[in-house]
Image (cartoon, rainbow, N blue to C red; front, side, top):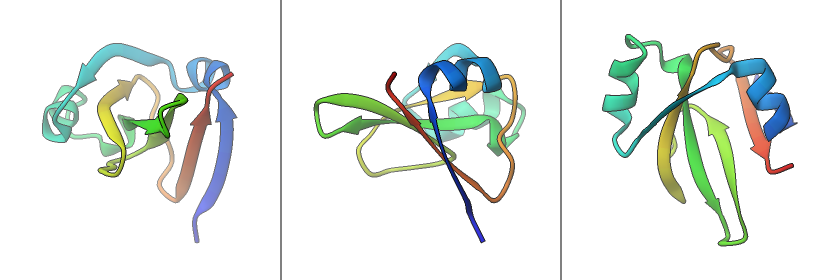
Length: 83
């Protein structure tokens, strides 16, 4: 069962510490974190009004991938909203 978590971008920054790296390809993002899939996030278009971030690999409304220093936990479904 998935654990749905919604946090603000400020909470995301404090908790997961995003890097300055962004990738257009999931495999490139995955390689940059040594294959640790729990450090890869998908940046998505929120209907043209805002940007959202979700953990893991995503394809729908994907803009790019980003990585973090701190991994998310398997079983978590994290939605990062704009502040």
